[in-house]
Image 1 (cartoon, chains in turn yellow, brown):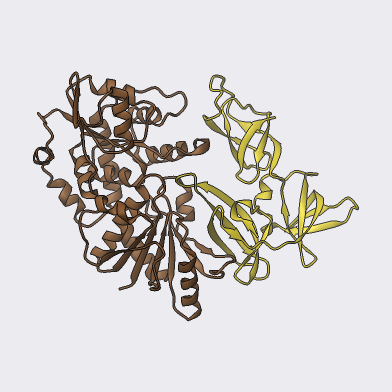
Image 2 (tube, chains in turn brown, blue):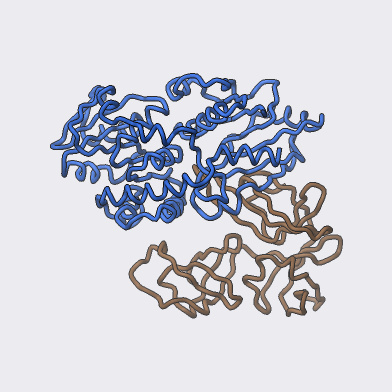
Length: 184
Length: 351
């Protein structure tokens, strides 16, 4: 079992008797340093969606699945195709890609997750580097990083970045929260 | 009517207990049979404004009786025996609605998380479904605690009479109340309050101790004067007395969640000191609240300084402007159902 805050998009957890893919996780700080985690789930067998919430330290029944290191190849609607080192290809349904779509780039390394021999989802590393393709002009002065502005990646995903970040900069993003970590 | 148990632990301050007591009292006033189960029941002796019919107190474990609704306040973690009895009741075919009452915030995640199920994985309670109930400031959340008749009592309040009855000398000057942790801008506040005749009502606790230490006021002193600032240190009082202290204020400094909501209902300008969290997570909560409040710039600057946010400078705001913002926000909140009404309906639908 893992704690709720350890669960990542792409993991598969048991919800009652149903195995469900975690499409999205949202970690939120409550009061007194407590936190909650909201999970968006989709049934592997039923294809139905649901959302649940846990305290961050609640135990969650994660199914141990097979993983394989792969890289992203291309999109063949409705499947995203990944390839391993032996050039074997695996297809993941677009509906199961979850937050991975926010960061998808050709050749990006992921772990493809298998349930009963079938590729069902991907897991991302906890942080990734991406280029900012659009943001408002950089403003010098505030170096605290606390004043933020919107910025976009190639995928269209929007990240809040400090105002000193410029278009063309590469940044490190925490894939668990979608938050800016640092300029690379 | 369902039977309710409200579980609460006292951690470092009494805010969790204050909310739990208020919730339990209002449920009982609406005809429910309620038990408040606290690990430090002795603290209720000074906090509770007398008995409420239908409300009783019990030890944190709850004993053998399993109610229809279990409210676990602020992740207090039920005793193992209680969890076992809930599980046994479930296996015997009884439906027990287990609600986790979460912390209040104006942040957007509250709407997304409110009312979601939380299945228990593992342990005695495996398979049981809890529910997360998030208080909040919008219709899509759990709402705010507001007891029936509160606003009428507020409108009918006689400030002069109450102050006189409390032994506080008041000559009509502006009144400010203080209930805080140890704010970094306390010295600046003291300076600002001396700028014109002011009566400062100081609630008992950490803030009072911080002020005494700063101003060199002995523990035994009930009152002290610094120029045109008169300070009056109030004793520990029950929740009703705390409300009336806020109702006296032309501006109220509050801390934690329960007193924030009470200051909102009081309808005067307010400054909220959020519970300080590691990594500065409380800054986002303050900003979200000020956005909901539609706070004027002066009030935002005061909040930044009062909460020790980076780069903030203390400045005294326009009190009337602040009061207008609070009253407008209060009107928006009053137009919504209160928390107990929403919780009753939630339990009826999910119990």
